[in-house]
Length: 87
Image (tube, rainbow, N blue to C red; front, side, top):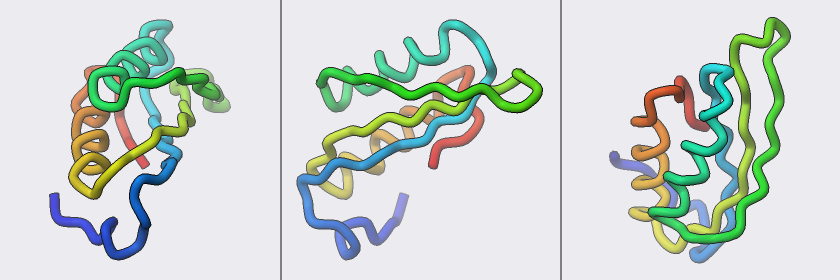
């Protein structure tokens, strides 16, 4: 992944990731477990259902320490089975 995060941000910084995925009870736990692997911390995700209730949007703030760290988190969150989009 080739991004310009290092030119746009001063590291370390807190970045809010927005993860959209299938409305399943396991989704928040999967997201937090993935983050614990790559950026251990105490997470308190905000979960909002879609208007039809088929998807959930999870917003979660993560301390990232480098461009590579941020790219790894994006890649790993995107690879989760229930996740459809990571912003």
